Length: 367
Image (tube, rainbow, N blue to C red; front, side, top):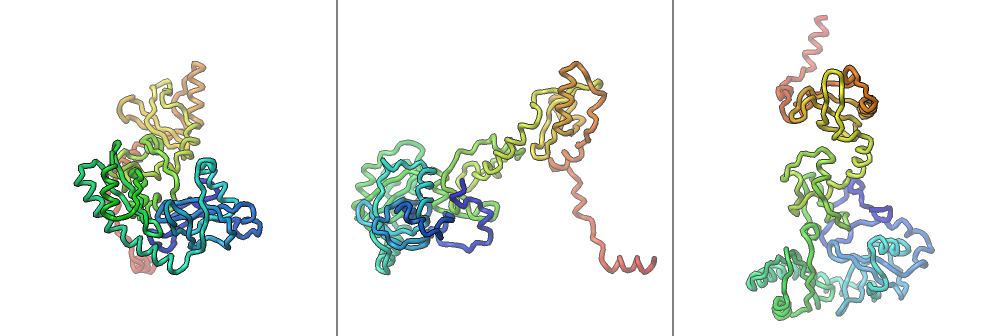
């Protein structure tokens, strides 16, 4: 995510709910749109169709286009209807960011601004998508294909439909395409997507209470590993780490760079601290707080002691010189805190009764 796209979900707090086929599901900030020379730099525009699908087109006719305008664009075959989301110089930067090679990518033309008739025809085509998807799943199952039809998107003129499917391996769907073409009497295009892309197209609400990031602002999907959870000291609970797509949550990657930078200031976890009384072994760390917790036993939590990273580096330097401090001075005992974090704290704290204002007044009056 860079400055050309508004990818921060916190900026969308309080935003009104939008339809699933709205171009606002992936908002962009066209911060150069108010400059008169912006559209003169290039005639390229970025157009969004249903959910996460976008395309780039030439506005050779120099139509007065701005963000939010419904337009008719060339397709293969026929035409499609979409919404303008970006114009001018930022389109070139967006294509560069998405690694779109203009020498290989066929940039088609904008035909016209959509009329009421165009919008009604597109709405009628999109109304067939749910019924088509259900029937398409039944046909794929009848042919014994190991695949799942995740979504169907009709072209604006209703002459073509894209069938988005999920499959673990390679699928020979040549016969399926013939069946689809005969059943629905349209031109068929099959497009394989992953579980994350399917969740982005279907949408939903995450455990955080917000709409899924993949269906609201995320454009590119990067791999998420369990190392991101370990780095942030997140409990490796599969039920909590998995998202709606049954994969690791994309939000696990959001703060990884911050934790990586902070972890560079911590001592190596394999380095032991030697004192005159005992040897201490790495137990845990808090990169953001800059603290490290050590145990006097290498296998279990014993005499847990937390000290700052600076103090740990100081003791390591003393050990390398052959010196040993008396104790880990400047440290604090965190045994009680560790017990609380692991769920063994004093739950009776929730039973403490609040004092009423009347009781306070009585005490003041007695005094």
